[in-house]
Amino acid sequence: MARINGIEESADGMMLSELLDKKGYSKRFIAVECNGEIIPKSCYENYKIQKDDQIEIVHFVGGG
Image (cartoon, rainbow, N blue to C red; front, side, top):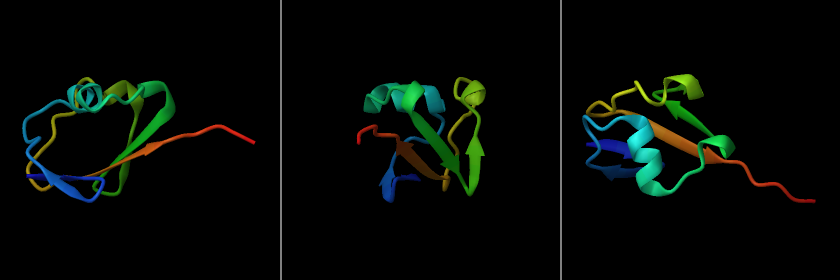
């Protein structure tokens, strides 16, 4: 199981882009960190989630 934003989920073997789509994130307004490293947006389609990955998804919110 992978840990996504602090919650264990069965996402092993899933592509990162698939997970983001499933969760309803707009790739335009997020940043993704996996095991302490930022994943470039250009790699979302090719990054396969592995067992024990620690993934943090940060959603940017505008306002003022």
